[in-house]
Image (cartoon, rainbow, N blue to C red; front, side, top):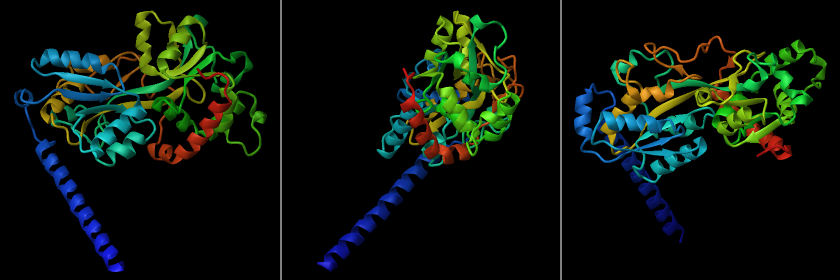
Length: 383
């Protein structure tokens, strides 16, 4: 009996090795076919793309629909299907698609504000970067490596325009005052990657928050041995209404239900639609944290040429004037290219924003999940 089990175990091991080898061989063949470093003209890519199927784009931003429309107008005969997903669902879907051996995704547009995108999709090469040389020379430092960032944003504090032209608070600890109970809206950080980034980033800024509390005149309010970041969020949570999205925050600010709210900075574009919201770029010690969006090619894409064309189009093409970038070049965003003027009057460097450390955020995940699950459970103001 022992010999039989031994032979079976050996057979299983051999099969696993063979399957692993086959999988690696398949991946290498796809990379070779993808020719990500090849210098190809737009005309050549278009000619090859016309022989491909519908391009499938997984995205966390509905603005990709506008890019799809201008892309299809620029390249008659090419068609794009947009699948709009929340960040956690997108990561799951792309990962499951790859592990199932499917080719149901070609291009991925996602933010990486929790570290999930990096650890599960980028580090595993389930998504790969495509950066043509004629665009690479215009990309700002740090935006085109293992991940191709195409726009910078922030998870930012907004206030209702009804409160005046200037932000009525100067120190973030003012948001813990009783008069703001139920008047601050924020997406649930366990459902929103952007809000998670803000909350995780603050966990690495305890000293700055402690100094701000002293500046606020209430340094003795911090209990001995209490982490200043955790203490801040415990106090602030008493005033916060937790929502499912930034859109709900903007609605509440505009209709008078909220005085303050944390939302993605690109929502500033909604002022053009009549929403009464104003950004707080200056706040002690910070008014938010930087975030960014990336566009990547899905491993095993079966529409490689169409995907390359679409990525080029969204990045603004070689000269930065391509229509595909315009939906993302709006107030509340910052360009990653050196040949595109900023759409936001305050620069990233001038705004009081923290810069999340991805490695630290990944390490903080267990602590964050436990801490915020308890906060949300005890909150009476979750929508």
